[in-house]
Image (tube, rainbow, N blue to C red; front, side, top):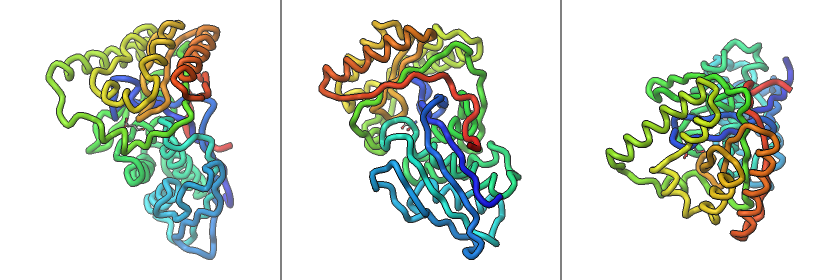
Length: 310
Ligand code: HSE
């Protein structure tokens, strides 16, 4: 192929108690990467066009998540005879907690792989996507995993990198409330405790295990009840204006659970009915407004596909 265009979805990392080990892709939002062969530039990656970022993302390929991922994919493929030109269309706001850098990295990996006949499967491409994410936001695969693979992805181990795809409950709906402010991941990681108590470890293990059980058995109420996190959420909550009120509003409006999406400031809630989801979205938006923050909301099912040709 001479040119391919790939979409990769937004992701909710952590999903409450699964800090750095659980993430899920959500339908309807994402980034788009077009990759084309550069026959005169062997082994090179060039960022040819970026839109939707307000001019803020680096254009140097070694500093751009899509560029890093494309280079790493070329290396995995062993392609040296041609180069790749990339055009990036950002659908995801930067520093929003929706896996913006991970979506660009996943889309770039899949696009470059397709450009050369798709010799690698998605799992084999993960190290390339993770290399990009590690360079720009930290070595965590809970965004790039689901952005590339779709669905719920559990990171069993990082060394070696071993991911497990979980089933998707049919009726599960995500409500995302995205405030108009930014929270860089590195900043949100600085506030995390270096050590935790054994009691917090036990409590969080129980919630994460229950969450995975709820996901695997299609029990959306259990999924919601297990979205509890005594470690990361309280550390980050002060960084998000109105956090407690927005979460309270979501639960009062009928959400089964609510927490911070990735590093924030987006909050996500889960529910299982379209009309409840609408009410939850309205309540979260109103609560952010009460805290002085404009926001937009999005309701989506789990994206089961991940990165795909469009
Ligand atoms: N697990 C990461 C964090 C995701 O919470 O810092 C960042 O998007």
